[in-house]
Length: 374
Image (cartoon, rainbow, N blue to C red; front, side, top):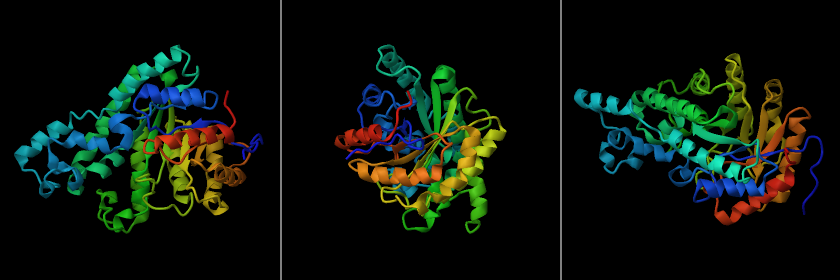
C-alpha cells in the first residue's frame, strides 16, 4: 500500500543511470519523459543496441589485433595476450592512436532525437541530456589482455578524452550532463582478482598487490585524471555512478556497507573541487536486502562534502515489485542523510538488462516514493 513521503527529508527527484530496455533512443526518452515528467532533471538515451551491455562492446575496437583482447573475445584463444614483434608493434600503436570509441557519435545522434522530442513537448523543458561514459579502467579491465594493458591504457584514455571533447563541441553545454561510470574500480579495490575467473580485475601497473593503500591511490588518481583536467567544461554538469556491477543481476561482490563507496567519493570529489570542477550529482547503489543502518552508516561521512559542493545524491534503492522494501530502505537512508542534502532515488544500476515487463513497476515505485522536482 502506498504511503506518503512528504516529509522534509523524503527523496526528491529520480535519476536514471543510463541503460533502459528499449529498442531505440526515441522509445527510451519518450517512456521516461511521459512516465516521470515532473521528477527528472536529466535523461540518458537508454544506451540501445550495442551499448545495452555496458562497456563490453568496446572490445570490437581492438579486433584488428586480437592478441590485445582477453580470450573471451578472441576467436583463437591461443593468441590472446600474445606478444608482438617490433615491426607489428608499430602497426598496433598506429591503430591505437586512431581509436574511435563511438561514445561521441552515439551521443550526438541521440541528442538530435532529444531536441526533436523536446520541441514536440515530450521531453520537458529544463531537462538536460545525460551522456554516461565509463572510465578508461572499465574498458581496459573488461576487454584487454593483462600483458597489453600498459600499452593500451594511454591510447584508450586519449580516445575517451577525444570523445568527451567532441560531445562538448557538438552539444550545447546548457543542455548537457556527463556521468562518469565507475564499477570496475570497486571490483579492483575489493581485490576480486583473488577469486577464480576474475583475474580481469587485477591491476596492471604494479606487482605490489598486497599494498591496498597504493592501489587505492592509483585508482583515485585515474578517476580524477579522467574527470578532471578540464576534460568536462565547468558549465557542463558532471556526475558519478559508483557501482558494484550488475552481471546477471548480481554484484561482483556484495558490499559490506557503503564504506568503500564513501571513501572513494571523499578522495575524488575534493580533488576535482580544487580544480574548480564541482560534482553536480552522485549515484550510489543499495542492495535489495539492505535496509539496515549498518549499510548506510558510512554515508554520514560524505554528507558534509555533498553539502559543501551542492551535490545531489541519488540512492539506488528502488526495486521492481518491492514498494514496501523501497520504503524501508528510504526510511533508513533518511536517518543518515539528514536535512540539508538534496537527495533522490534511482534503480541500483542501469535497467538495460531488466526484463521489459518489470520496468513499469520500477517507474511506478519511483513516482510514488519521490517528490517531484518541478
